[in-house]
Length: 175
Image 1 (cartoon, rainbow, N blue to C red):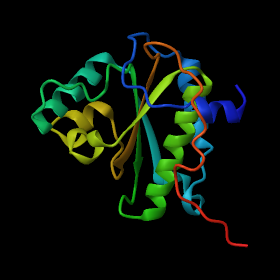
Image 2: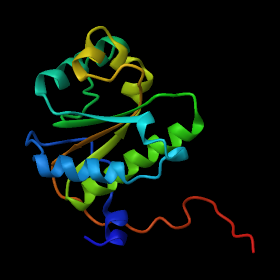
Image 3: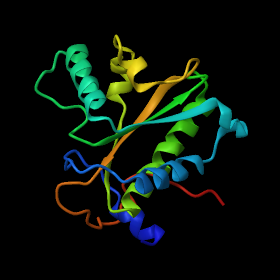
């Protein structure tokens, strides 16, 4: 799929089929993330964890329900894969910007693979990944803090090209 079509087809998916991603799909998404612009070229300050284990995904969902008190909502939307970007210095704005670029590259790659994807921040910000036993299960390396997440999988239905969004975000050009 050409890049312009990918941009116009990319959308948030909040309902996934149970089919697992192939190793090739996961590797393509990881390559896309690894090709993101990284602040100060300090690649060693970032880590991507891919969680595909259904028992661990269920444990994350359970922990999120306890943390939020909302037992009706599935914060992973049934996604078979959860990509977590962690950084060494979570208060550094450059690291947060780079983590966002990593997530966006993987989000676009998912679309190019005709997969659905959804950027998630609630699980990161509300402490779910720090809940008892979760951090160990998802194997976040020592010294790293999760700052961004992306769900990926096969969507219910098809991804369709959306209307162009030029003009929805205010802009100006200074010559």
